[in-house]
Image 1: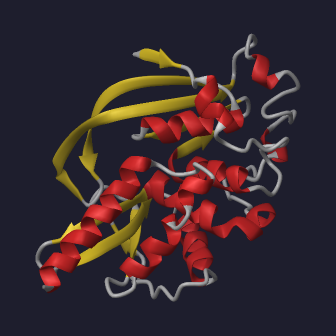
Image 2 (image 1 turned 30 degrees about the vertical axis):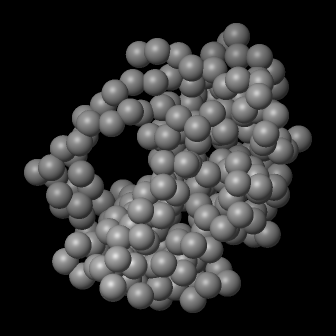
Image 3 (image 1 turned 60 degrees about the horizontal axis):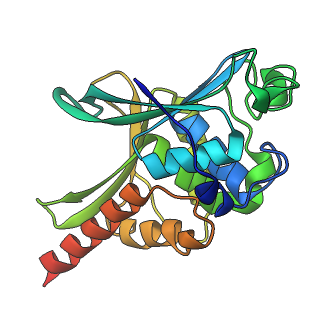
Length: 239
């Protein structure tokens, strides 16, 4: 396992909030990732992503140590399929020598001061004005984008073991400015839950989600490329 540190040039491109818990686009993006692919304990937050650029952004926003490894895991919808991919883990807090955490975890004495309660339920009220970045973080943390060759459509879905988190994600999408009907919550073969955006609404929803994201740098380039390729394939299928 190797350790990676964000460069100063990358950090300067991101508008860093004074408080990573306050209402701010970068904070919303960070906590979307925490909820989607992270883990919060008494003295540590760990966030996992497959995109190096996104990992660097999250490290610039919240500090911490970034490590890289290659992993193999089962595909969420079909456990008979495995895939090998790069994995970047950002660890915040938990080390006495972590200078980014001088007064506790993100400046708080314990996790009760974070937007997650003792039962693991997330509170996103502070990020209500930054729903696009919050949902984008959630999608990159626990979502999938694909081209469905059988129907020539784009698929966007969210997968997580926490049913309550997916219910909250559904509420956030229902309140977004783009009409995006959703399918029912279903169970995955791995014991988690998932739901998808209706195929007809996926292009508009995905386009809105990544619209103007270069202005803030709060996105995973590999995920946006996957969306763009899928949209291009769907357009070609229609032709």
